Length: 415
Ligand code: SF4
Ligand code: SF4
Image 1 (tube, rainbow, N blue to C red):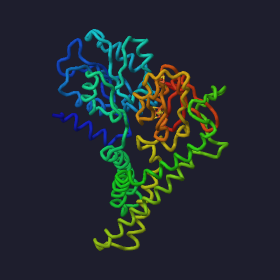
Image 2 (tube, rainbow, N blue to C red; image 1 turned 120 degrees about the vertical axis):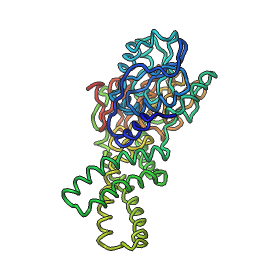
Image 3 (cartoon, protein in one colour; image 1 turned 180 degrees about the horizontal axis):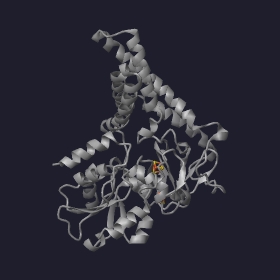
Image 4 (cartoon, rainbow, N blue to C red; image 1 turned 90 degrees about the horizontal axis):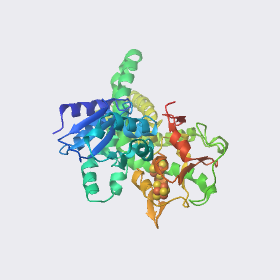
């Protein structure tokens, strides 16, 4: 039975999803663990801690909470907040080494962009096992592990189901409704109710209907992929760039810029807005409230909100790279000569882009790639790397050393 704390933290976390919500780091005992009990690790985002604890209910195990500055696993690992240091530090200082005889720790799969399993092993002696993407799959995952199997594609894949889309809608709606309510109360009081209503209805509409128009966003990404034709097939190795691209625009000369994507998303916003207004029309007619002034005011407020939500619609989903990130143009490349077919890339890729064929990795789903870099960070043979449309190559060492900030620039860890 979930505790009151679980509900409270989930509600606060959903309303303020865009903000860090730190929990205490360190060791938690779940049930009555003994010296052979499994050890799990998560970040110190309070919502994640509560969700993992709920998933572990009924099990006897240990949970390590590593410092991620109160940010969720995926954002923290790609942004350098959940790092080798966080993992090594909690393994070394929590006292877990005195409590169990084995040295196996289960990490959330989405931490793979930030924590290097090889470094953790070298520094602590602990062997990292990549768990499922979602905490709710932990019980099934531990069963699969006990049976000696690997996790299936469903447990590895990040999706965007209705519940997650509703959470994202609330993430936009709650803070914006507060800010806009305050502004309209001061400057345009008769628009107060209309503005607050639009702040909630528009994001809900945008995210609930997402599957209906997401193909339009895919089309744009496909167009960008065309620039990679110069590289030929996967496996051709253009050689390391003398000047690895770090924190500079990739596009300029080709005329591709992040604003291209913004304008493209603008079309999506416009179509969504027109559909939204078509829905408002019959409603106003039925309610007997239709007037030109009402339509104009609804049109203005809802279009403003629609444009606001669509500024980074792709970045609000886990299935696209942010439209504000120039790095969405990078493509994962494979050096087949180096690949040993170990399957780690298959295990950590949240978009199921890889398969193993003939003891070699094959990139079978590059169109799904969200450039998270987990596969490159974890590949023990350095067989994977990013290539840009301009012929630059981003080598594994650079990717491990530099992390993405919110605006998509690569910064040195901790900078
Ligand atoms: S992780 Fe690297 S070496 Fe292992 S299968 Fe993937 S590409 Fe090959
Ligand atoms: S293939 Fe793309 S989505 Fe998959 S792990 Fe690599 S960078 Fe991430």
